Amino acid sequence: MRAEGLSVGSTVREALAWGTERLQGAGVPNPQYDTAVILGQIFGRPRLELPLYYRSPLTRPQAADFEGLVRRRMSREPLQYVLGHEGFMGLDFSVDPRGLIPRPETEGLAERALAIVGAGHPQPRIADVGTGSGCLAIVLAKTVPGARVWAIDRSEDALALARENAAHHVVADQIEFVAGDYLQPLVRRGVAVDLVVSNPPYIPSGEIPSLQEEVREFEPRSALDGGPDGLAAYRALAGQAPLVLTRPGWLALEIGHGQAEAVAALLAAAGFGTIENHSDLAGISRVITARIGLESAPPSGTRRADNPAGRP
Image (cartoon, rainbow, N blue to C red; front, side, top):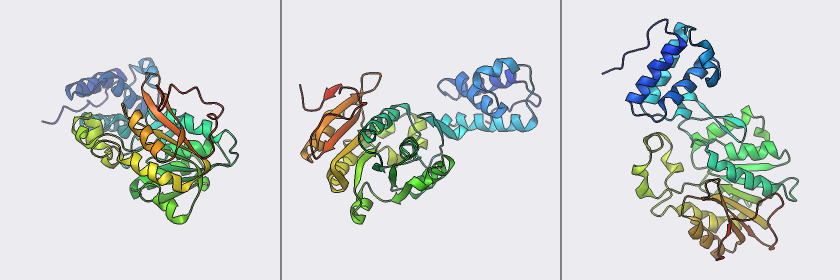
């Protein structure tokens, strides 16, 4: 049965109560927060300022838009897709089901990549594999003005989304968007880069059905499914990265929980050294960096490795 609609002339307070009740009934986590964020966007005020406008009535268009977005969230569509945007490294990105939603964990990967290219690479050449919304490629291009970036994705839809975001952030002239699997497009072209960065799919196929509904039903499966053991993308990258990296060259990868040892072993077998695990604020290994070519200390600006791979 269709949930009762929001009454015409409802105030901000009444709209918040209506939305919270509907989201709670739909089993949405944090219904009060999500309702306030949605209403804040519709009403044109930050979420925390809404109490100042509790008695203000919504216009008819505002009420209709708010109700529509709440109903989308009731279907368990991710809040970020409902809102149409998400922050990453201080920048705002358009997001929709064409690409994976940028997550705070991936900011650690961006920080590691920036530390690498900031150490003796005035005009770094970077490949972002599985670019999705383009968040990594765009942050790297915008933060390092001399950078040239190849943003690679097998999905033309994802590349279209990344192009939109690059245009919005005025870095499209620094980024070449390339369709293809992993690094194969650069291998075919004979392109050499100083850094390969990737947040690849790493969830084992058998675990996909147990994911939160928002992730399982709405985010692109190709950006989640890492094959039977979750390591398919890492095998491909370990094999292909040496074919495109300069010497010395760097690889920076986001990894799933419990995958550090296996990914480090794949990289070591492919000829990489200086392999290091980097933990997030919860102490979970989230990023692996590795160097191929001349061995040296990690680039300035990086923290000491939490657990250098292969060491006791």
